[in-house]
Amino acid sequence: MIQFAKTKTIVSSMDPLIRIVISVMTEGKRNRIRSEMAPVLEELRELQSEISGIDLPRNEAGEVDDDKVDAKTLAELIRLNDRVQLITNTVINVKHLQASFVRLEGAEVEGMAIDSPEMLLEHAPEALTQEVLGLIKADAEMPSIERKNFE
Image (cartoon, rainbow, N blue to C red; front, top):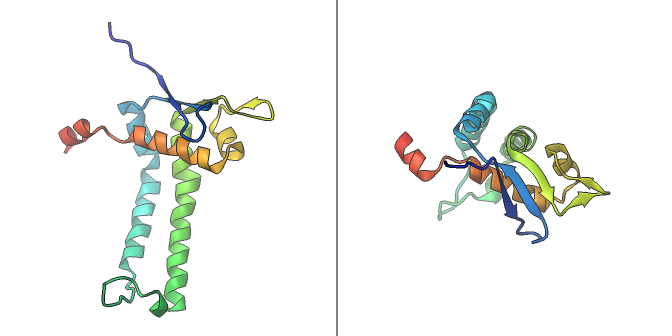
């Protein structure tokens, strides 16, 4: 009989005494996340399309010439990029944490376990939160063999 693990434990690159426990990504969970985030991902694609549609002055090397970007265009780019960051940080990252974060072992906040996405976001160091998100997002990606079969 084959046994499937429901969680995986990874030693933190930040501190070897901290272990990050995440639930294993399944196809069902991956599909649920995609479905729940579909409207948000559509908004992100629209924002990215707006950003790429802005005509920026370029130098001879084809790079954006920052000195020639007018204030109105710069303000629009900043507004669009701020919106992308807000959606990423408050919706997409939170959804990934809610779907897969289980707990940190070897780390506490004033004697309390870090065993929820809220505790992680509110109390863990930014670098550790980003490490957890990176692990979850990497786990959420479709394995290359599945991706190849899907295409």
